[in-house]
Image (tube, rainbow, N blue to C red; front, side, top):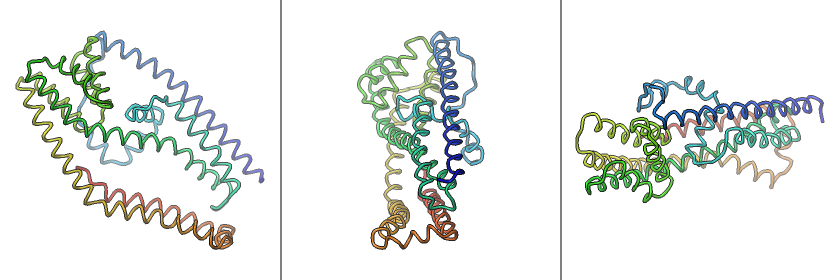
Length: 322
């Protein structure tokens, strides 16, 4: 094995260990800070912070700002895992990513299909290291979709309970007991925060942060606005549930209309991989010569990059937000 490959492997392994140790220390400090914040919130001593319940459109439109914000990976990963409902810590995710990167570095060193061994090792290590993070993202998407399906039912339950004469806090308690997880879990947390003495506006803002959906922000804004101006909250929640159902129905229609584009994206992504596997079975020596040639390695690297870029743009085109 070349000395450069061994040195690269050792350097990457040391960097991974350092990243894991730094992440563990940062997570311990953040956990202490969160515990202190929870105690202050329960005691009514939280800091007065100006919070907007709507997303910052400028940050959403600017890809550079989103990329810069994602560099705080430990905090970002902790938020993603909390929204996914996974009881992991950020240091555990970093450790899993580091462990997955090690076999990728080894496989890339043994099979340098790209320009050279170190580049292949880094590429394979990066791909395998991203697997735990992609798993968290998939779990988060599934949980948020479940939130969207349960939210109209939850609002109808609150409206019926308030029409029956129950107070809003009692309705929240009943909803948390009756509604299935994951949304029932978040409403139980909302009621527990308020029951421990936290002001309603702070508890609702924490709920909107834990459930990063536009529907949750509409619900929080409606309750806070009704608290300040008055009005029939049961009627407001019923109309909000109707609007959410109509938006969810429209989203289903858009998803059905874009099904052809999603199928095309999947076929165009999987077809080159299937062709490569078929050639390895039918003609084993056909691709090995291309992988051994310097120009062939450049072509393979360009093809992989083109596949990733093409899949990204297709996803952007067919991802219609409602």
